[in-house]
Structure formats: structure tokens, C-alpha cells
Amino acid sequence: AQSVTQLGSHVSVSEGALVLLRCNYSSSVPPYLFWYVQYPNQGLQLLLKYTSAATLVKGINGFEAEFKKSETSFHLTKPSAHMSDAAEYFCAVSDLPNDYKLSFGAGTTVTVRA
Amino acid sequence: DGGITQSPKYLFRKEGQNVTLSCEQNLNHDAMYWYRQDPGQGLRLIYYSQIVNDFQKGDIAEGYSVSREKKESFPLTVTSAQKNPTAFYLCASSRQGSGELFFGEGSRLTVL
Image 1 (tube, rainbow over the protein chains, first blue to last red):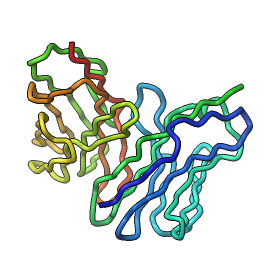
Image 2: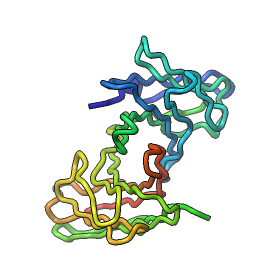
Image 3: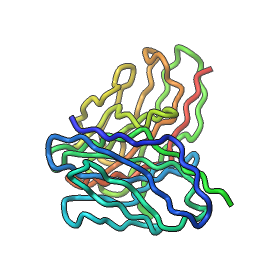
Image 4: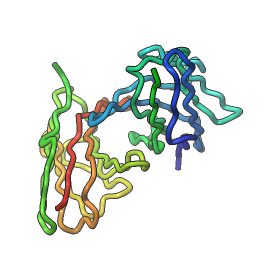
């Protein structure tokens, strides 16, 4: 079964600094990978997704992620953090099109220091 | 506007009581899901449904029940058999084969 591991449950960055959130996947087939963001007491919103096209995926709010098969990774980055980026971020994997279900990582909480 | 509506947003119950969480979507999505979220554990799948009148157990279905009588609706009942029901519950939907989930704003259940 597919799974993802998010390294680091909390990340603290200064405003304007690089945001780097790490995600490694385990999948027996070429995976579909997703990053979601959750603001306090709200549902999740899709940031970006990888579906076997370009390995560098651009998402909303200036985020991007790079699929590296050799490292089984799908790390999320943003060059310059903004206060509004403070949230919890989840990596998820699916074996689509064979499986509707997503398996989520434990999440990484990002705090942004002024 | 299209979206997913969950209600109630906050719910308190006494031990031994069943409660039902509502989830309605007007996105015309075929698939619907219920996830449970606990701090530090990410999201865990309770039940999912790909078509009306059909649903499957997820990873943590014990103590929960669902129905899918209409495409738009996928209510979740937390029964008294659920040993640790206090959690944040999220409903989601997706188009067939998409993998992109659209989430509601969640329901926070607290057992007193």
C-alpha cells in the first residue's frame, strides 16, 4: 500500500525566508502526489498535484514541488515566506487511476516569524 | 457557489449517545469521503462512497456508519461503539478518477 512520510512536524521560518517542507513516498506503482494546506479550524485546500507530467509542479500562493523518483521525494518549497503561509501542510499519495483514496502524511505545521 | 457543507460545526455529546454529522455537496461529484483528524496523526479514512447506494470501509470504520441514498448527501453516524470519538471530522468529495479532494470546513465533535 502507498504511504507518505513528512519529515518534521513543525517548521519555523522568518518572513521572507525559504520554506521547505519534506515528503517522501512509498508506492509500488508510479504515484500521484498532492500537497494540501489547512488553516485553523478549516478544511483542506489543494496546493498542487503531480500526475506524471512535468516533475516540477507549480501550485497556488507561490508554492512549488519537485518529484524526484530516485529519492522517492516530493518536497514543497516557497522562495519567500509570508505571514499568511502559517498553516498546516499535508502531503498525500494515491495509486490513481486504480484507487480513489488518498493516504495522508501526519502533517507539518508552519509558523512564520515577523 | 459550489462546495461542500458540513453541519454542525461544533457538537457535544454524552457518552453512549449516537450522533449524526451531515455532509452535502453541490459539485455533482460521484465520490464522497469521511476522514477523521487527530493532532499529529494526519487524516485517516473512515468510509468512502463512489456511487449512490454503495460505500466501503476505510482504515478506521469501527464504531461508525454511513449511508449514500442521494448523490449529494453522505451523512456519518458516530455510534456509541466508537471508543474515542472526540475528533475533528472532515467530509470531502471528488470527480471520478480525479484524486483531487474538495473538503468541507469540518465538524468538531467533543464527548463529555
